[in-house]
Structure formats: structure tokens, C-alpha cells
Length: 61
Image (cartoon, rainbow, N blue to C red; front, top):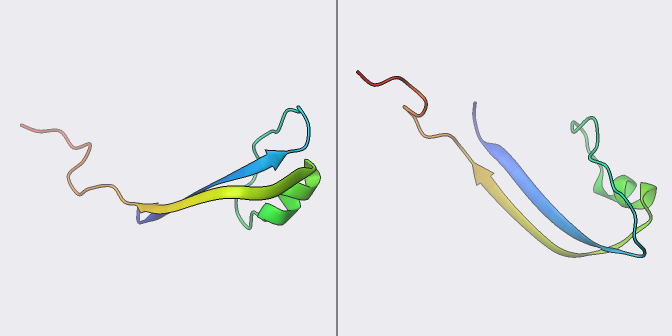
């Protein structure tokens, strides 16, 4: 319900590695995440809001 805010950030990786999604997204800190995985600086980002249209997913008779 409500508006969802979605952010995609592309980081430069300093080497080949596996990066796992965080288990908890509340109070997510991008700088801490980048430091944890030894990621380089962000090179691109996109941000958008999304909201489900009213009537979506309801049964029609």
C-alpha cells in the first residue's frame, strides 16, 4: 500500500566478487553496504516512485 520509493545504485567493483542483498532494508545505509563489500564509488543511480493503481488485482464480474 502507498507509495514505494525505489533506488538503483551502480557501483564500480574493484574485483570479481559475490555481493549479497541485505537481509534487512529498514534504515539501509548505502555507504556501509559499499564499505562492507569493498565497492568503489557509485557510478550511476536512478530513483523513482511507484504506486499501485486503484482497482488493480480485484476480481471483475
